[in-house]
Image (cartoon, rainbow, N blue to C red):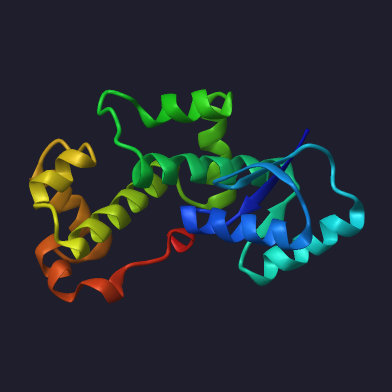
Length: 187
């Protein structure tokens, strides 16, 4: 069994695009998930070059060095946790990352800061704010429902954090909305 790690693979649509590209190249994948492709065996060098090239043309990148793979896994766990799962407020991000990556959180935190130039916590907050923006644009939930869904202790705390990150209040953002959202791989 072989794993490939893919940078910028941050949503279900990305998984579909990568899966389609694998099919087009005749590469059978055992599993395709956020940031990872599991294969039954190693790819031949020519097939690997073809895959690298075609994924790069789509905005993805196969990552070979260990540090980059760990960083990408951290990002994918955070994105998955914030954007695709309902979370238990009593679970700490540090516990989730340590459990998912089987590495000490202090190591992960130091590595992330060293490579990304920001902390895991700031990246996590940025992802949460992007999710808040998405939910505000959809206009299906109240601000208190959004705060509850994203495990904020209060609407006031969510509003303060939102303003600190975006420079706007949630209600002002809602008025100017859609053009202020970022793709998840650009957060």
